[in-house]
Length: 460
Image 1 (cartoon, helix red, strand yellow):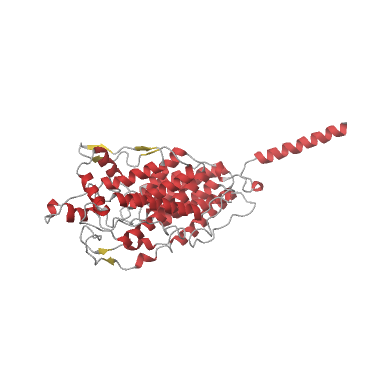
Image 2 (tube, rainbow, N blue to C red):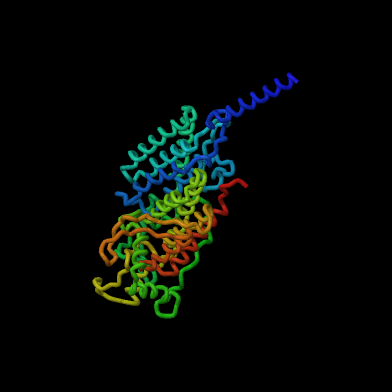
């Protein structure tokens, strides 16, 4: 009896020791990767988006329409930096286009995933956002601040330094990969020669398209085949038959412009990047992502997943849209209206759209394509009917006819409702036809669907 009692006491002591060992900090070496990414908040991702946004906001040096490119590579970097702590997820190596193999964590060693994410986002931001001279100081300030906080949280220098090194190594690999995606950068400018009716021609009458804009569609996509077979065709050109789809499509833009309501004007201006002193074209989706993360407040694993998936989809949608534009070369509404509906030889009396026309062809509409891809990707992450508020330009003042007023916010019940609002805003603005925005939105959604079908973030 006494022997049994001693044995029971021994078992209790061993159990107590085991419990104490497990509780003695989840970052101890013998716990390996047991502290998963989902155990941490997404604050590190939200804070880095908060640093990147001012760097993007009306930058001193224009960088074209490739904002989705920065979002994509940053998203992949943070995802790969924390994916080893996500047992249900896997690396994107072997799935993304020409992506190199990523660094590996050390077996049996502990990592602090927020520190990994901090190091990766600091390094990739430092190397990508070189267009803004404020980058280095902003990056260093946040990186140091988070590392100081994490050092207190982790309480183990070896784990902290190992996590930093891993995050840096991932970012280095992702950046190296990013430098090989745009062979068009050294190409000679495109010089337009076809000035026939129905063909796009710049409003400034300059036939030289510089800065690689015309070749952006030749950029390497993040996902091979993501932009294949996603594009419909414009309506057949017809400026003589008022009942033809082509004529009616452009006539609608003219008719709408003659009776714009206050709400239509506000919507058109709100999404007229960067007319309200805002983000360059395509970059406004990044603050929207941050607001969604702020409002949904997911754990670090879902935030990294969302950042990567939406970034990849937006980047490829940008490429697909520009490729289609310079393939079809369809004229803009101002051309058709000034030539056919309201012709005039006097520039002072020419019809003008409500917002300025961007310097590239009409079909498909860029913002519609971007927003379609963005909405589709976010829906696969967070689900249907997710309500959120877009306050990107709250605080920005603009005169819509009643004097300067705050541009305010828009509330949506789903990501697709958001995308639809952006698409139709381009018709209200007078810069796209309805066919261009509707087909553009479909193209963007198809691209995001292709990304979803070809890239498996989760293990099967």
